[in-house]
Image (cartoon, rainbow, N blue to C red; front, side, top):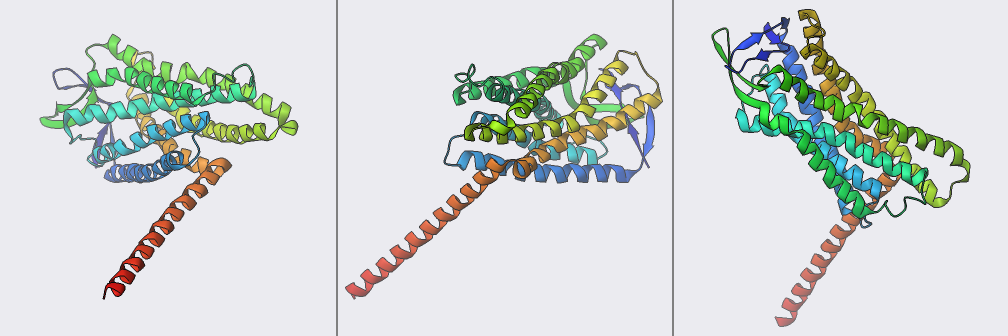
Length: 348
């Protein structure tokens, strides 16, 4: 048996201020780390495939595809740093990588939360303009503006992750005469803790969700009203919109429980609710819903293939182009070899 402290409150002098302990079987750590490594490998492979298709295809990306490719890039970054947390979990939440990687890994994780939701906000607004008000916003829906919006989302995600850079520490803490290496948020006082912890539910959930809900409602209304009289261009927009709605639904299923837990943690930090039972249940639920949220990065590329007819077409075209290049290269090498041999025979 090992003891899992959920959550642990560390003081600035390196001691544990207060704990609520519950016994956890050692196999839980192995099972959880196995799950983390599995989704990390799948996520890296799938999102690399998505980025390769968008980058190698002969046609330039549409506005929606620019946002989706950046979403895939954010998911790829998350999946690339997730194995570090898998090793941390396997070691019973003892962080073996030092302070620098503690900050880098957690900034990457934190940025993914913000970038995921705001890339979906951008693509939802684009679908809203394409279907609900296509004429009045035609000039705005251009790739150069989409790329600028993506740059702003990345910068915004980095800006909101500054508290992680400042307060996340990989260091040793002392508990029962034992030095424990941890990667832990360590705030100087409760007010800063509430402000920093409140940023994620506010900017990552409470602000963007109403925007997403409004755009989605208007999009569905527009599709229902004009489904029977769509032109060929509008049918293409409809296919892209179906994919976006599927990605949005997957996001809500995976991320809403995570944000609800974060809001409940804020109530715990504000001492509105408390008690060891609530503390432990919240800690265990937080672990479950966090890794459910991370599974969304694996689910997105699968949805592109299952729902996205245009994406499947691009995959086939990229594959044919790759095979064609290999065939041309092989034919060229064979012809060159034949010519060289013929020249040798003539010279003899």
